Image (tube, rainbow, N blue to C red; front, side, top):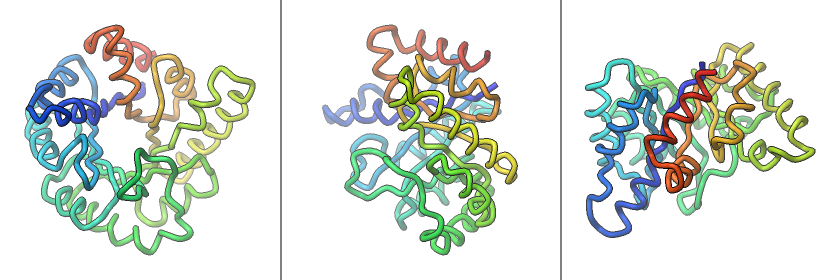
Length: 242
């Protein structure tokens, strides 16, 4: 079974847009966990336009009341981000190569260039008992390098798959992701996935049995406008359980 971690950034975006604590991040997160999701994800960016650093502390306190559930904090490892993560000590930290002004994540790490920067950061996080994930493009040859610099997992950036889904390019694209996931497993890494996965395409992506966890937020929030928050969470869990 593939675990579901619900990304709550869009809840933060709605809350922040009116300057009120509505919708409340913790309340929505508690509904997610109560419905059976495995974890929560936030990606606080430097401008805190959606998830904030305070949310990291609040959600850590919530998850502590749910044994076996996890908090994943993802983001670019600048000094402020690392200070918060090392203080909060989430179960998992996903390092993403975002520019501070970037709208959303759109590429994985270039380990040939960035490994010397990442290695000591990964070491600090692991010293605190935090599982470390690197956000990666589906390139099988880079998985051994991710393992060698200390990562516990990789998260495959899935926008290319989402764009290819239900087109003639789907089969070839999915094969590339499967090969990357298999290479990661062979290197001793678990495999997460995220970005533009939705109710239509997530089942096909995970049916190879290689994906440990998916992080879904944007599509899940949009689908909830039509179908309801609780219903959509249950639908994802049903798909992933199969």
